Image 1 (cartoon, rainbow, N blue to C red):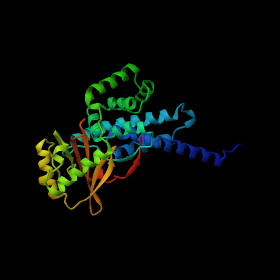
Image 2: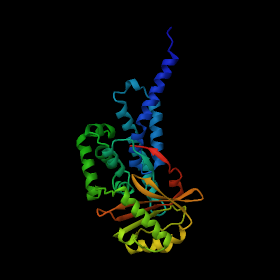
Image 3: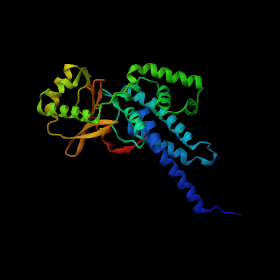
Length: 304
């Protein structure tokens, strides 16, 4: 009776795991954009890994496509459940901030980075789970309709209709303007100075007239509940945040594909701030995440 070669089996297992780890950044990028939180995205990727381990790879025609399909479908299922829980979310819900390291060429990196922005992820919230997945796979990850059809288990006409409907719902907002890094840091410096001094200073001219501020405390820490607009934003920054944030340690960081601010109190991250910009390079949206659950894992992660 022949016996299997243990060393050969071990090599096959190592190759099995190695292939998955090479695919992990792409899977995490897909899952995060679908779900909007790193924690849920990592759960979706881990569930995909468990299925991958239990699968006979030799029976899979295209392992990469299999992984994309498995992760996408798991993310869609999780998003449907997340939508129900977000109805009961206390205050404004914002995507979980991430410090993503994107390992790709410069042009692709810019496109992928811009699709990680808080503003873009919030626009995706307008879509159904399947619309969101179809749009991301085809428009952001440049998958052919044939591959998207396989991932979503639907006909090509239906898939094309999903993508078309998603584009219509997002509308002209799909244009994602990002100023140069120098301009971003200039805006961040003016933002910090306005809060530290309690005076609008240069920041006033750097804000769009219809600027909006949205804060997410998740009902766990104090923060503004309403979405502020226009002059109310400046008043809030200089009259209220100026007193609350004076003692925090401030630092610039790469958040969701652009420069942002991380604030710490005694080494603990207590807030993450990011912006969206108009075509003139002014601040159009200010996003403040204070929910400690969304700040707990704010470290570097590699994703596509």
